[in-house]
Image 1 (cartoon, rainbow, N blue to C red):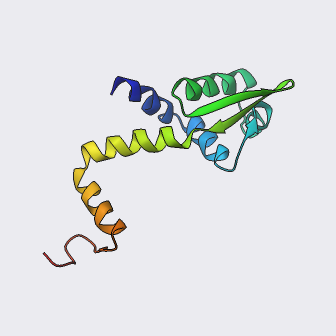
Image 2: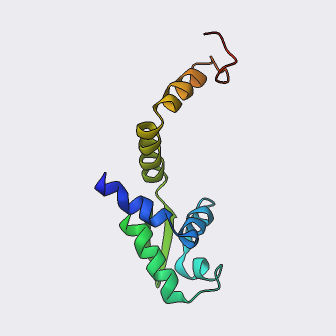
Length: 110
């Protein structure tokens, strides 16, 4: 789980969570990301470095810009794995729902 600790450390900061939410809509340049916050460019760069180190974003260079995009699978697999380990009943409920046997806990047949 030590590999996943970087993901949870990255998610602990509200600025980084907002960056991830902003990237849901698609790729953004570092400057576009920075313009959405009232903090310095170097601070945003540090946040982006943490997100990249955790595997939550990827970057690519285009001319003189760095473009960032979301690594959706990394977030889903890490958080999903944690939830499955901590709340195994949720896995059973999710499988039941996915098969079409959706019923709220305590309301369906035994």
